[in-house]
Figure 1 (cartoon, one colour):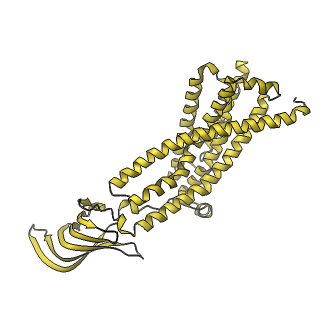
Figure 2 (cartoon, helix red, strand yellow):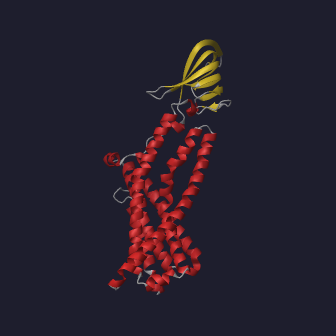
Figure 3 (cartoon, rainbow, N blue to C red):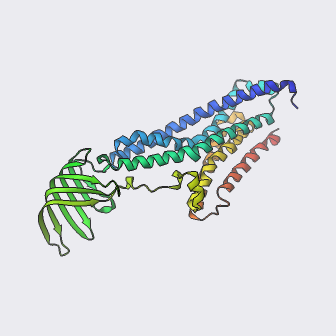
Length: 361
């Protein structure tokens, strides 16, 4: 029992532990987030180089990916942050001081549980509201950008393949208003191939249907008939409908849905998304307790082993959650079971680590 006279000191030490764990967790998470952001930026730059994403979307793509990056690595950051903080306390001899002041192992576990619950609430808000809002806004930006000449997916001075293997298009120049010079179109449709050339053209996008088209003026049309013969015809005006690029045809996913729509859908993908939004919050609580047990009961002389075990637990845990979400969405796993069996397995591992105390004692 802790004497009541020590309660003010215990509260002070509890706040000190919470601040220390929070500082280490935020620092470790920030490092992992930075790494993910750099890798994601490289992917976006590759899409820009391929003409699938306009340059103006680079900054927005990176910013809107931030909630996803935080949700992905926050459980690992919290886990490693607590372990590093406890290691620092042991190295500086502060653990002995905390124990002498009345900070029992049970008290540390209670503080870790509170810390995990605080992080879980933040993760639930991030996964349930911030991230879906970011995905919805990303979709809006793509739709808006697709209505500008910048997002035609056509690089001036280069031959560009059209989506759905419809052919090839070339323009020497293309401004932001969609006005092009020296237009060449090799168009394939219903086993018929034709080539159209003109000195000028106008790319247009219907504001109501989003349908793309190019209007060519004073050009020549060359068609190849089924028997192999070629027909040439001069035209004053010709309009060709162009398929939308795949980057602009982003289907709306349950991950971007609001809670009301998600709860009312009742489909397997919607149920899988519900489990997924809660999963990371629960994972933060379980991994927080696991980190404390690892820091306390795995020998400190093998700190590398503790980190390896922590990484292994995280990797297996998160991958099983991902796999279970796919199974629920595909109907291979009952939504009643959902992702709960993975949490139960991770909790069993944490309980097993906690019982190592008696054996090592």
